[in-house]
Image (cartoon, rainbow, N blue to C red; front, side, top):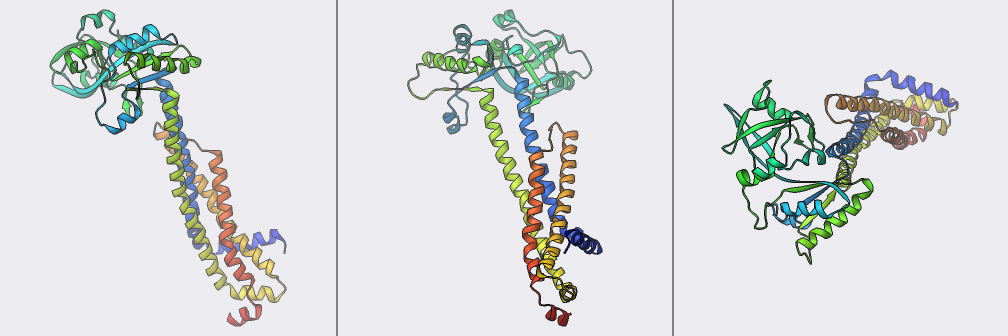
Length: 405
């Protein structure tokens, strides 16, 4: 039998039962749409994480108190980094460009009858260059403000809107833990980073933070939440990591486990990539189950079709159709259902991905590999699950089929 003629006959048969054919394809449509959407969202999440890390600043390293193993064992962040460590790194590590020590906390800021629970960061003037922030109005605090522990504050744009509305915040007075601070600057809008809003934030001198807000809890000086460091260039990152590690081991007199952790942007991004890739594969596998369900649906409907078309099969065999002709006929019908469902599912999934990229910050993309995978799996499922009903139809005895009909 001519293949083209078989395709025409299969299409005519399927169109004669539009509702049943549509419902049969539904599982394939949902499965393909889910696979395309999940992989697209996963790749979009990886891209967003990469862009956010790049927005932090170039060639960044983070020095965090406590070892990675130690932080997993205890809930409280250890106080093993102090301001003198940051000063030593700045002075002695040649592979770095700049250092920004930080103390962070979260507390309520008051302005007249308004208040906001906001992140407060005590830091130094180098924070702007290290963490890639810019000033929109006013100024950032300087070394003199640090030396005198001045009660001055720089606010993010969202915090400014919450407290001051459309009013110019420069020169206004706000209260942090009953201490009056003068607003001297407003940062440029920066957006969120891994769920943290960089615009709903306040910056104060690190000495003011230590002396008036959180207090000193380390016997070795002003304890820090984190030290951010920029390397001279991308090629200097590994050298900077090595030199910082050796310096802090000497300063802390470490002979066994480190009481600090040095992380690079690449380290953290690799961890996030591993997590998002794993989640994407897991979600795609779950979505793929619906493809299997759709394949079983195709097999069931085709088996019903064989039973309903017993007379047709017997008649075709009686006038000369071979087992191979009948086998090909039913296989083509199954494959058409599967491929049509696959195409509609890919279109639906692609539309979902585009919608997500429009209405959310997640730049989800339609992955060509996901499209190829979904299309090939759809065709394979139709071929695989079409075999049983096609063989059953092909093996019908024409005399029995005509008598049964």
